[in-house]
Length: 170
Image (tube, rainbow, N blue to C red; front, side, top):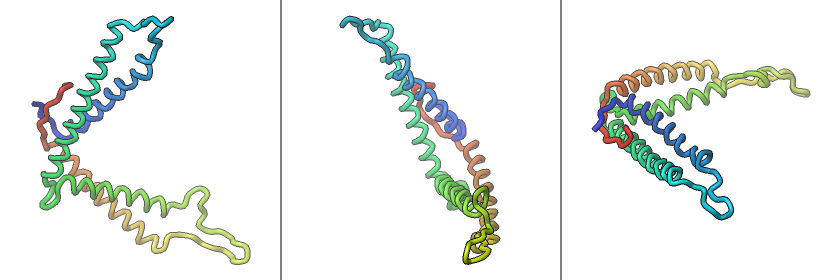
């Protein structure tokens, strides 16, 4: 059994995914090669073994990634970051708040090609904007403050909460 903080497990998942991608890439490069000349196989036992080893390693990496993600999910859904709020709850709130911030900021931003004041023939000078833009901007600031506070709580939780897993590749 291996004991890791959630933060370490998240980093390890990233590393294992990179290893899995490298193994899979071998099938596009290293293992995709001429295999016969004049109907005679030119594949050596060593090359065949490398393919089998890669397939086995891919299975082990897949197992470890799933094991880590499952352990993290279980810990997040059963552990409270604050009274009545599990880590999963807070992560979902954080995800939604970040999306809301991103969307609202894009709606309130008038950049290149989006002039606020236009002259429209037959109408006059037209100013465009978001209704109650000051209130929307204040709301964005409130969301950002809340999201930052939640991020700090999640970071603290991830660095101190431990999981135990049985890995095949480590």
